[in-house]
Image (tube, rainbow, N blue to C red):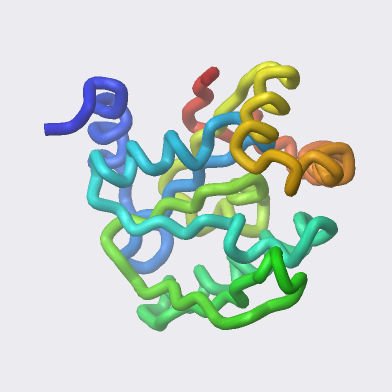
Length: 179
């Protein structure tokens, strides 16, 4: 039995067709601190989905714009039944350290800002946008990542501003949720 919080989404997902070969891909997008990872964890538990956390692949503090094309490339492989591959990023070493494999699956959740970018949208069965006030988002992000993130908050937010000004992701979302 799913949590009532996710029941309507599970029904919505069940009614969608795969857009990435035999894989239904759902993107959970939104700005930093909007609650994407926690929300995605609950949705994955409710659906049994595999999750790809974009935090694992962003190429550093200045790599947000480079991420959607990497994800789209991996999904293009999944769409033809192959395993997609994406470099895993080490935030400690500030370099790629290994490769994440993204095999075809019945349901794949993309968790992260940029997951609903135009280059990824053709592979999506559903795009969910999470929203929260800026002060709430910042408090959540800093509580989650503390001093590691604090010096980079403005730098990352500026990248989000640039990406979202081009992508208009929220306006393409099938579902918008305020957290």
